[in-house]
Amino acid sequence: MCGIAGIASSTSSPADLDRDLRRALNALRHRGPDGMGVWQASGDPIALGHRRLSIFDLSSAGDQPMESANGRYGLTYNGAIFNFWQIRRDLEARGYRFRSQSDTEVLLEAFAEWGTAAVNRFVGMFAFAIWDRVERHLTLCTDRFGIKPLYYFQAEGAFLFASELRGLAAFPALPRSIDPAALNEFLQYGYITPPHTILTGARKLPPATILQFRLDGSEPRVSTYWRPEDHTTPFAGSEGEAREHLDALLAEACGACLLADVPVGIFLSGGIDSSLVTAFVAKQSTQQPKTFTIGFSDRSVDESHFARAVASYLGTDHTEITITPEALRDAVPSWGRLYDEPFANTSGLPLHLLSLEARKSVKVALGADGGDELFGGYREYANLPRAMARWHRLPVLLRAAVARGAQGLPASVLAGTLRLASAGRLSATRDRSEKILCLLRNPSLARLFDTSRSTFLPDQIERLTGHYTPSHPVLDPAIADEAARLMRHDLAVSLPGSMLPKVDRVTMAAGIEARVPLLDHRLAEFALSLPTGLKIGALGNKHLLRSLLYDKIDRSLIDRPKQGFVVPLRAWLLKDLSPLVEDGLSPAAIAGTGCLETSEVARIVAQFRSGADVKHHRVWFLLAFVLWYQAFFEPPATPI
Image 1 (cartoon, one colour):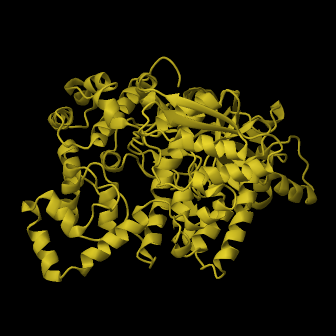
Image 2 (cartoon, one colour):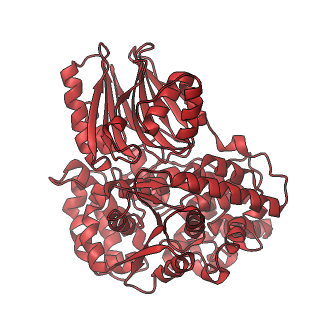
Image 3 (cartoon, one colour):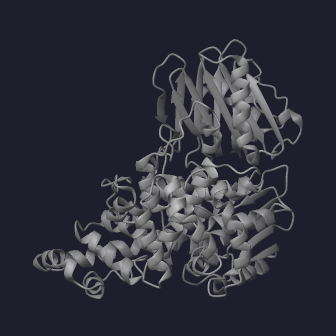
């Protein structure tokens, strides 16, 4: 786990390349506190840079950038290849000899042997760049799910890349202007999906993508080497056979993630996914596993006792931190520095505080991201298709009448007619009314799903920014099963757009490598082949995962409604964080961004403070954007 950056420019001198690259690496110093390296190819206008967080081979033999044994390739790499010893043995059988004990050298020599096809052999998470001195082209690549980030920008005669947007923006060639469409997407969903970024012209390499760039002015060649839709041949076995196969795959995935030359721990929430990961690790570890969990002083949202019970049952060395409103208040101003793009997933901040605590005793932490998207964890996957089925069972004339008269109907009547109150996130009365009115203009599963996931709606975004550009794609019509269609959308959109960046940024800022065993692509391919009935079944959401976990942990410890990683945001915004709202969303601060309508922001904040039924997440989204803007365009003197 590291930070990488590079520059190829036909108009820059070697000294200019070195200077600009070092500026980018300084912006990424939080990703690699253990060392920094720069490599230039003799005679080629290319420089690669690396910030190191040492996980494998802690000696200088594992330093990067690294040059291949034949001198043809130069590599800078972020991530971990968990099966690198197996690949190394294959290469040694072909005559290769290795100087280090690192996965970096194995990746590099595998590329030297098989070219871009080598990526199909890798099990792990990665983002890397390789310069080929013979072909004189640069190859960039990301892992299958986008666990590791990689940003890039192409200008005339130059190509830049970096692990984070802040590193890319450190290059003088990158324009620092906000993309209006990306801002719209953030206001609607709270994140920005690849390949888009908040800065005009900058791009984020999507998951499972290979990009090759030449200094001849041609457009980069971009290809996808792995797609979920290529792994959906239906599983033909019984439920018992599926559970047995899943057990073996999870054991292999969790075991692979334990491979490191530094201490490893687990983020344990006490939910299905993290408890399952902990159970497998506890069974395989030669030492007592270390687990870490978050508690809140507000007992209404605190679930730490569930994690404590699981940790006790499995016999882990458990650490628990309790977050108070005061601790959060002191940490929130750093939000804009933790995330290099506007980001609003509120669970990121307590996770960062947990990462800081975990870093005192481990350097690698296993998480459980991906379980919801692959195994049917979110309630919407079942509820929203049922809600639309109820809607379509209404007589056509009644549906038309409701749609025509929606503007005049009270929210309670609309909710009763559509029976959407149980559909997931349509909770507050004003919020529910606005979303139902939006939905009735063109009712469909895709529209309902999109609306349920939106914080600001299109007309509200237009009032805030002066325009609205639709962002997320429609649901894939080739997938017949509606729940599977929603899961696939989240796998392609919210996972790489929100969940994975959240974990990457806050753990890296704490000096921790986060690993996600549930996103082992072999396990994911199996999950993609399963029918929805094995994901949402008699045991509820995550039917198959629950069935497997019940064999490993007392069922009473984990059988409870899914709550998610909830923080008491509304109370914090009204009380402890009120001064930050006052300053951050003041007319002067909003006007300073040049992106938002000050009067509209003032109206939203005034309604929220007056006790009106205004969704508090809208206030947080606006504050999160301002905190990012101030940190990005007015960087502080101190690092993350």
